[in-house]
Length: 246
Ligand SMILES: [Fe+2]
Ligand SMILES: [Fe+2]
Image (cartoon, rainbow, N blue to C red; front, side):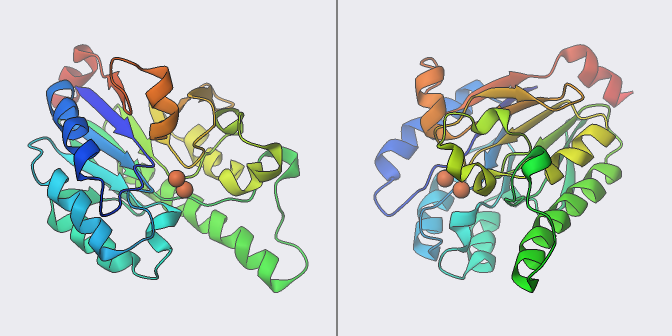
């Protein structure tokens, strides 16, 4: 199975021109497409319609998580419905199996990494901020627990590790992800993790337990993969797939 992954398309009303060739190239290169959030720019339903039109032309399964930009206009449910009606499966603490490969997805949240991560201490607002990340990590954990496949792929928008946000200004690291998202990745046998949000981050890193983490923000990938500008391809070996089907 060839998995194409990308994030941070930031589609708006004028994106048809560059989206069409991108979607066509994905259709020729992959068996499943993962969209890791910030699919549209201001969270507007009309932007989602632009994306939906392109997605609906794809014959391969599309799995997605929302990003922070999908929330900007206060209409994430409407945006989710438009994208879902176009055939994409939007994961929010959900798990799906496609061709014997398991996928778990959640948006995630910020809060920072390692010992310097924000703690739920002091003002109520700080506690709420931290609990948002904890809740997202719990949703990811329960999605992973539901998967029975040998291969488990995770979609996030925010990063679970610091390594793949390096390249961004250090001052904004805490807004780009949270180590709390890493905990479930180390508790379950996860094959690979894809995320976006850090447009100027680093393409690859690993969790403490060695799980590969890929930052698939489109701008970043346009420089890294000239053959597949804007998306990343990962191949799941045939032997693993056939074992799932037994
Ligand atoms: Fe983004
Ligand atoms: Fe984002």
